[in-house]
Amino acid sequence: MTTLAPTIPAPAAAAPRSVLPPFRWLFPATTVGLILFILLPPITLLSLSVNDRFDLVWGIFPHGISFDLYRESGPAILRSVADSMRIALPTVVVCFLVGLPVAYALVRLRFPGRGLLAELVNLPLVFPPIVLAFGLMQIFKQGPLSGTSPWVAIVLGHAVVSLPFMIQPIIAALQRVDVSVEDAARSLGAGPLRAFATTVLPVIMPSVLTGVALVFARSISDFEITLLLTTPEISTMPIAIYQAFESGSTRLGAAVAMATNVFAVAVIVILEIAVRRLRWW
Image 1 (cartoon, rainbow, N blue to C red):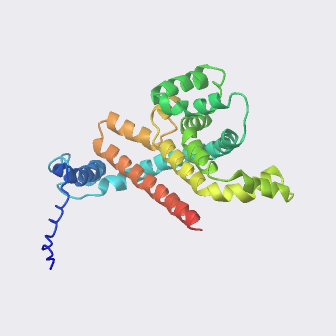
Image 2: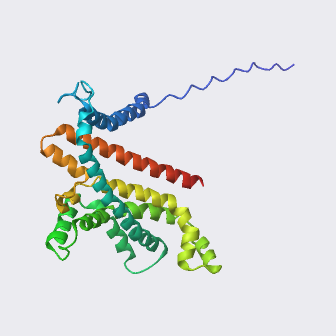
Image 3: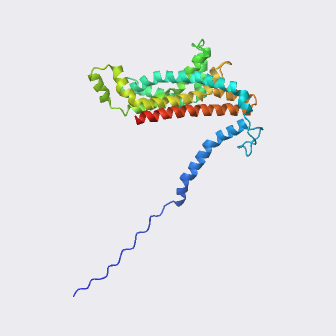
């Protein structure tokens, strides 16, 4: 009679151990550090603008709360916001009117110099802003366009440096749109412009609004071009901040900076909500 040997269960596999245990704390630590690094500057500016003294507790928190500075400097702050809007909105329009056809040509068309044009479009991202500002100052103040209105000069200068922020999101969106959809609309009798407006534009509209948000944010935060092309009658928010600090009014500069942050964040949030709704539809 054959006897079966008892079966010995195999040892349970050991739970996998992390190769580098300390690294599991790296992500939370860097995330907390990033959040603090982003939030502390605006918190400090807010504290400085509402502080009833000239120094802060630990350099961050106010001793007491007072909104007298905002009441006294309200007209100046509103003027800087209005001047920034008078420049940022036309800049967005110019970038849209130029950026949309350029992006379409780079994606859909094949023509000599296409690669060169693609590189030229991105040059404003590579050049230091002060270099572009100095070149634009020579063109608009001492060159062939010296008679141009300073408002127009600043808008055109902002459009030059902001154009890549409009073109790149649109290029990325157009590359995801099947060209056959547009061809089908043309085969049904629609002209090129109508086919684009009815089949392509609604699909890429979220990316267009993303470009609008980026261009708007770039324009209202520009300092170098505005500084070299401005006149005393123009006082955008960055210029107002610079003038406040130059005059020794640190708290006023902090107040204008906070107004700039609140205004920019409000506009970006509105545009972001619009982008999300368009994508959901």
